[in-house]
Length: 367
Image (tube, rainbow, N blue to C red; front, side, top):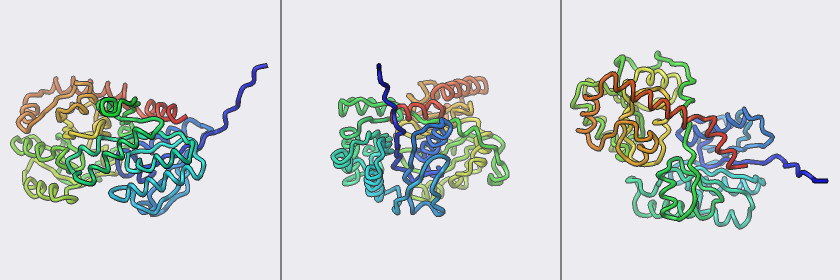
């Protein structure tokens, strides 16, 4: 008689983020939606999410069907290396069989973890961090070494964009799974226009990002300052000299509305419901969550011309390299073209960027 082995429930650990509920950035949104997907699966497997004790005031013990554990450090900046390393150690000590590590900050600890644990480790290496302009010297060297360690010592490597997977193949001759982000959660919130600042126009172009040179904020502002088209630009203007200088230079332009970060889902939905163009200046980092979220709204995308953005939008958006290019695109794109491009963006988003398929891909890999 043939005997069938009954597989016991698996313990899955998710590390490398501020934690859930997701209120911070792309990885936090990813984890939040993985937890939601797992809860809906009604799986016998258990998941534990490691969270930053410094960033959580209430410290709940659970979120949906996920257990929460805390490390009393910041999850970002220089502390992220130690934060991730401690999280890895705790995960293997508590006998988790499968570990999802988001980002490469703690990857230098992986050689030791592999020596002491048989846990399956899947690492999402995020963007090619060491190539970003904001890093230099020791920081760049550490990030590059961390990327190498993540690829070398993880059982599975994940990229959110084919261009990053191509980099892994070319640089390390290693296979890489491409799993993007979902964006359909942006449609589930109820618009709350009352929470928006007063004085915004009824219709406008929208840009939303961290205020950093690699996101070409200066280029976008220069372009829209030369035309009368309204632009709402949401970002952390006060967090760097770059942002403060740009806000000082452009804040008085009547068609430019420079807003501080908007995190509340209802306010974000209200902002997005009035958009005519989405302007995406990112030049690095893979598939950007704000891009795939906005694609679900069916509006035309004006994206900086780089391989990451072309892959994410399947070469079907409108692309610019300079402020002059961006001015030309805004002025030359009429209503019929806008509708057609917007529908294409929406079709791509519905086909590639939904949390149902992203969740299935992650849990199939972790199982």
